Image 1 (cartoon, rainbow, N blue to C red):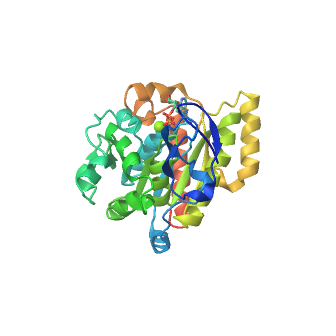
Image 2 (image 1 turned 90 degrees about the vertical axis):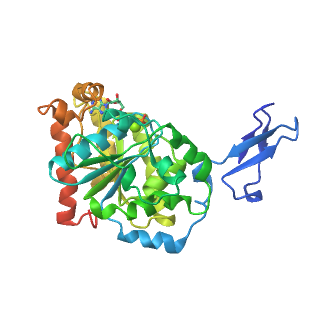
Image 3 (image 1 turned 90 degrees about the horizontal axis):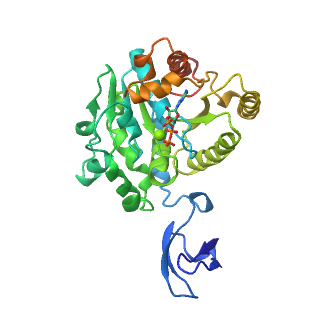
Length: 317
Ligand SMILES: Nc1ncnc2c1ncn2[C@@H]1O[C@H](COP(=O)(O)OP(=O)(O)OP(=O)(O)O)[C@@H](O)[C@H]1O
Ligand SMILES: [Mg+2]
């Protein structure tokens, strides 16, 4: 593993076997500067595997995380609009804003007063008191705030840190038909916890070269999660902001669906300016403009997910 001194910029080749810690301090042998080293997650085994804990996850139902390391691919928009569509279909939905950016909380028009951080600070296991009703029937929210950044610092790398969210969702999951978790465009504490808690990972991707490339990376991480902390997880790729008039969009869509076949949702979400406008109005797109193509497509996505339960394409969903 190559590390570089943050002071004199000298690069060193560190023997990976000298430590198995994800974060550690190193002293530069040239300038003696001490600096923090954080290993990229995929270069080492997921730490602190607890096999018995991993097996327990098989019983989880209907928890969906929306994840992609690539930023701006419509993770938050998908959580909000899929959640609203499921709630319109009379499903009880909990949205979990598990991103320090708090975009989901803000998109719903709520101040970010408290978050999962305050749950852990108070040594509470019960999330119920932190969950708020939104102005939409059947749609509730566990908000986020800027304190969430401390969770990564405090818990990432601790024994069994991957199970912190799952264990707490387990206590309340019976109250909801679907729990949908928004994640940041990075791995570490939040995404590893969300994927460990989830039955299904939705991977939103635009039909752009780099975005499609990023999908391979997320799928690799999900494979690791499947092997280590959550054997029950499955995934589906969701094409977002699709532009049918663009030949490159069409080409990349064909490549993605050829490669991932049934792991790609049949529903695509088109580029629709109403999604952007609805965000400014702090509303899901179906409430802002019921006739918009994005509103109809997110409703189709909700129906596609509901059909899994009937067809048992994804066990339990
Ligand atoms: N179908 C769509 N059509 C047009 N614009 C869209 C669509 N979906 C999302 N957007 C816009 O794209 C931008 C990024 O969306 P969003 O915040 O949902 O992405 P994200 O993946 O959650 O980003 P981040 O990685 O920062 O969390 C926003 O401005 C949003 O309004
Ligand atoms: Mg987001």
